[in-house]
Image 1 (cartoon, rainbow, N blue to C red):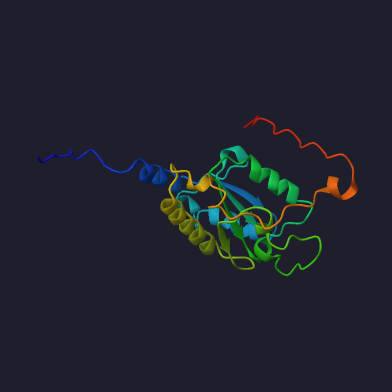
Image 2 (cartoon, rainbow, N blue to C red; image 1 turned 30 degrees about the vertical axis):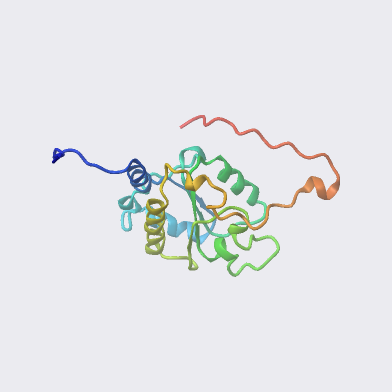
Length: 194
């Protein structure tokens, strides 16, 4: 029996379609702190135009983002803010560590600079350099899109804790170190405004 499909009908698996949609509509959340932030701005500018690759809208609300780009050094005082922003982002979410400082601490081998954000949040792509060129960040976005297409979205593989790279250690718990009562976490406020 020959079943003909009209020309305006595309036959595919729902998971493949959802992965294709998700990989071509990444909404980056910039966490730029130093010279890598300048290169991140150049990547979004007209010469390099990251929008050609489906990562057009830079959002500054974590609830509207699914890709965090950590560009530059992160000091210990900023680490709770970074983790809180990461927790406020909806699943599935991805992270790109841009530059030597975000990946390994770079030239700042001190007690106050985080020696790699992958100790505290899971990182999907690393972009080496000090600072890396915009073309390197664009290549990382393309590689991340390939990873999203391969992993799928509807089967829930990105929600499994075994599938995600877990942080090597958590922040020190101040309450257990000083025998004081455990501080209550701040409430997550609803997104109000622009």
